[in-house]
Length: 420
Ligand SMILES: [Zn+2]
Image (cartoon, rainbow, N blue to C red):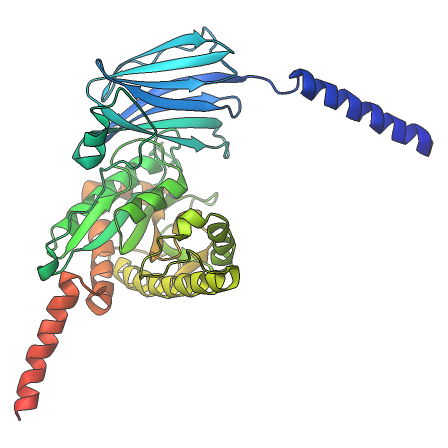
């Protein structure tokens, strides 16, 4: 092909593409691929799988209580069945609106506070819209009741920590994150044990153990079998004002002889890429813990502050993770004798010390069997708890009941020394 022929070929292709885009033939309408309602104790979600992104509008109506989701330029094939009632959802209906808008109406058993999250596509998971329906407990729900049509309220309330009164010091809050869930089963064992199930059991056991400890409070990022985006997990920990974030997983590898647990914290490289993201999304960065505010700072200073916060966080994460790893040695085999560092997204909160515990290799038959035993899961949960407690006994955050109790003990020990 001559140069002239080559360039006119590209010019013709360009023209073709332009006309396709202009006519709308290029931008296909999004097709709904699946609709389902996932209900758990404290949360009901509508999951809409789509062939691609689409504009959407979410609002509520009252008398009777309904949630309406409008998807513009979309289609709903006849083969897609309406999901059955579950959780607060009493029924789902679909209808057509002008301009190829598909309207989904959720009849709810009570007024709810809906939130919408866009997800994917990631790995095997397609593009999704996830509507989370919080039931109206507390001030957020109360705000919704009187209005006829309220759009997109703020946060769900289920993991808000209740702190002790200020004079006795607040509780240390630990966010426990069961990996995977819902459409994402995580790893599968040779006997089909699903990671998402066993890690939820361990996470619940860990929260129970934490809550049995005065001065500590555990909160779950998910309390049932539903999907949560990684960043939503971090957001939930942040909303609960967590002092520590612990994500629970079970590892998988091709070699079936590999077994044991490992503990991870964020790597420096993962941290620096996250700093860039936080600076790009200033609204995230406005409320860092420890009084650091990036608001109104110039870019260079904001970067330095964020860096400091993140490095402090990583070293605290490391100290906590080392205690947990030490304690896991007591329950069984530890895969690697040192805390590992990796760029896991879920560990990227710049101001909340975070760790990820791979409790075992679910791909190993013996480990899989142990993960199925409630007694073993309790041993793992207790070991993680012991490590967390060891860490906080030396590193109780200011203002917590534990920090005050320690100060009182130190004062009591000091007094006789001064009297001498
Ligand atoms: Zn996992």
